[in-house]
Image (cartoon, rainbow, N blue to C red; front, side, top):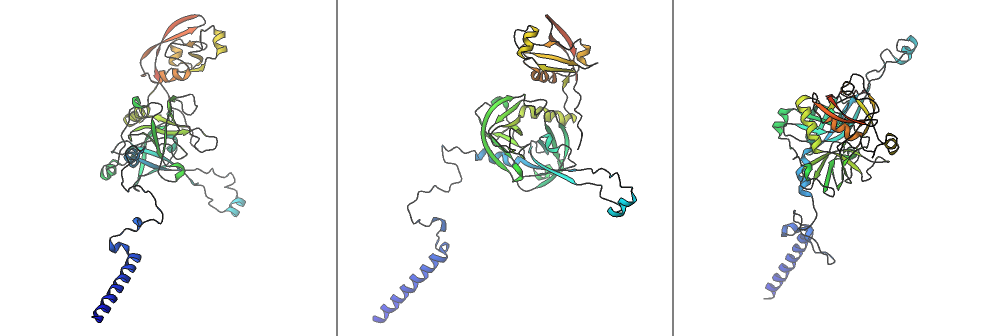
Length: 388
């Protein structure tokens, strides 16, 4: 009996020792998770469910929906080095060699873009790809593709890129869903997605601070969404999405004195971007109306000097010779007025929206005389841009 008791005691002791060692070094062998070990103090911890708890303000679904369609845009541009004036001088060539470097270096840039079609079309800002010799886009999943410029519109700062259609179809590119500007209201939550400072894809949150922002001097044609979602250098061309993950704007610019975000960012509305994009894809350019006038704002002093009841309208400061306005009888000093014309920017937008070839009646004031001038709308000439 004594012998059996000793065997039992030794067996229990060894078993407990083995159990202690296993539970300490390999707790998973016993079906335990190290993360679920009891705390040394009483703590309250949430569950590990991947879903947002009811009532919490999470925009993970919107971000998850839009993130795959936002790409990084990398560009490079060849810088031309001017020929040295002493290149043919024998003494200069003796010291610096027969064939000094003249090809130059490459200047690189980065920005963001949004895949709007599974066939490979990408919307971005014109200034992101302006002057680029090579364009490459990197998807959120790590894939890289070369892209070419379909066309650009410097006056709205929009450009359309395209990845090879065969590769786009083969790899099933993710495309974002376009939103409706009619549904966007001041106070709505929006998310800005892009590649700020080249750190990688980033999502920031804010609200729609204002709609229809203009007179900023950023673009020729301005109708911006203002948001306080953080937008920084590198975010240009990225997506501004609503709380459902739909694209409502293309991030374009920030108001900043330091180069960083100060809570005032601007995005081009999707309605404008879609119109420009469709024209570029169809014709390679954007067609706008033009009459060839230079207009200036009517100040209170000008209104008093002209005997005007208010300062609304646009003063025609100059008329280009031979332009549609000149042919139609518009002269410097005339005032274009009407309920729809509040200032020169509105006038420019209204004329640009007209179809070239149409004849429009302009309501004018010349001194104290009111009259209508029929003007045949012309085609707005493209901006001449000099490459660096």
